[in-house]
Image (cartoon, rainbow, N blue to C red; front, side, top):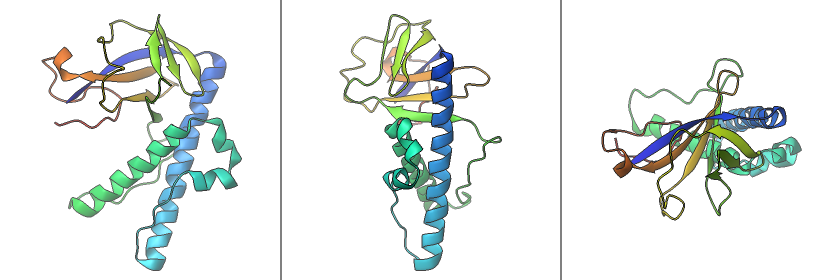
Length: 186
């Protein structure tokens, strides 16, 4: 079971613009993949696997944001489809709204592309973002083979980021408590 560490982030003006662009690009990719999957299923009655790379050719501005964030949108859509077909009562995946949905994106920690040091969080494409680090991250979290995600949520109200850790560091936690979308047992 994983535990998430939440920290408030304080991006500069340029970083906030790039984070908001990433929110928009993730929404764009999710909505287009959902529309294309829906159309392909209606025409052929088969599920078509679509990747964000196909949209980068027709929309080159998608290259400005973190590619892992776009890839995670594909995983989120696949998960929504699986839930729809496997769990009765689950509704069909919905399109994300610019104003009504929660603005967030998830990126993966691979090859040292993200880390926390001296009150700063390094994010792919965004760079070092100042954070309010009110607690220490457990030693050895980078060397752990577990899946690591960084989730960024809603820059308009407040800035947060999540960093998952082992449940052993917080014995009272019963489920993942954070903004990351890591695999956990509830």
